[in-house]
Length: 134
Image 1 (cartoon, one colour):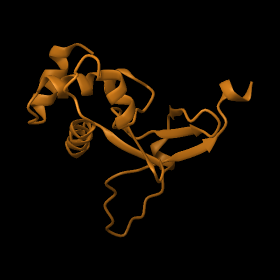
Image 2 (cartoon, rainbow, N blue to C red; image 1 turned 45 degrees about the vertical axis):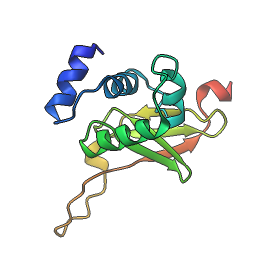
Image 3 (cartoon, rainbow, N blue to C red; image 1 turned 90 degrees about the horizontal axis):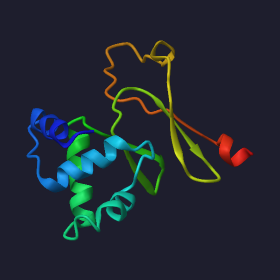
Image 4 (cartoon, rainbow, N blue to C red; image 1 turned 45 degrees about the horizontal axis):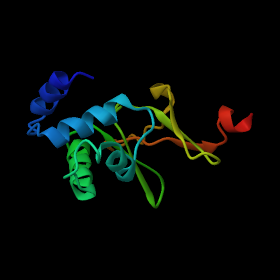
């Protein structure tokens, strides 16, 4: 993703596009790995020596609040983040720990009806990925 596009995207959500925010969102948008705060920190710490884990956490929290990212909590003690905000499922490999996306037919999702408003849908599956199975 081009930095100019990231800047425009952040500005469209009324987020001040600081250098750190631009780099964090660019990394998040360009990976399929569903990174944790720790992963993002390790990826960016050489390029941005002043970057702290708290800055990353606060930035990701802001992105989630502004609907630019989703918090993925397949495991209770593990927070991962995803720049894809449309409805889709997540498969976690119990051997290698990777989290992979898969499509969901939205027409098959439960609808509670009776005046309920659904704000978010999380669909998680655990198993062994093809790479670990071989």
